[in-house]
Length: 458
Image (cartoon, rainbow, N blue to C red; front, top):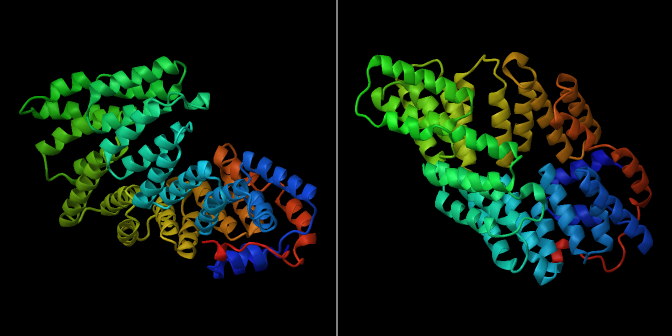
């Protein structure tokens, strides 16, 4: 298959019909062969080999344009690699899916929008999916909807979604306690610690061996005692020193709710200290209190700017992280750009990785790839260079430049062979050359008469 040519055409064309139904050249084969190809695509989907799914199903849907499941699987795979045409495919699927299955496409469109950071758009799709899925076991949909709302700071609405999820039986055993765990987290973010403890105990009763539930309970243990000690008007300098030690301990144990409560009093004690405001914002972000985190971090930036603090770039980086969490990607890029200017000469590649991810979500893939490649050149001491190579590979994968993507993934594996994400990325391309070789025979065939174009689907 002329992979490079297709990648170039995909990058230049905004017409999904042009690529999937003309340039991809539908397969000429009998019905049994089509069944076999669909089965192979299904197995590839189960094995997280998104590129194989895309190569097969982009041809398959041209021969069977009314197969709703094929559109769903293709749309999911395109979402996985960050291809913009995922939305067109999923929307097309809604036009051929039975009414009782349209919710599944709407949920996938919600996931796509959420991954892009389009939180409000995602909520619209998740809401439509929730309303359409009458009678279906959709605990996972309510969980995903709640997660998306929580990322926008809409904690009460997220809570309602998680409570709805707890009332629906879980399909997969490993998600049985997830709704309760998420509910506990969002109650913590609202500082309703007593209710959070009760909910987390419910989760523990349901999944007594769950490490995640046990960790969540541990992270909140002792918070009542901390709040009691903090409920006073003044502190001596010695007491403030003790509180600083407690913050350090809380961070080391990822007990961010406790860290945030202590830092709130420390910031009151010295409101002009940028580093305290920075760590307060960091703790708030980790505790799920994103809107408060943004306010504190912007205050840290203001103080650091006035004091010509050399750590200013770190403060701006974290504000960018929070803006990105909230889906404000244009604002995040502004902070990342300023942080990059402030950190000129720094060897911290994590800044460039964060900026690249955000640029990708802004629809600026070429700039994103440049950021990732910049990160690969920086000191491994301050940068997860394997993550940088992983993201370079993801950019190349999106453009169907499989050989180059594979080489980038190998670089990531060479740096950290024990990282599951690196191995999974490389494994996702297993068999791609064989699939392309077997599909090559059909690439020069004319589209069959009656092929349905996405451009003509209302």
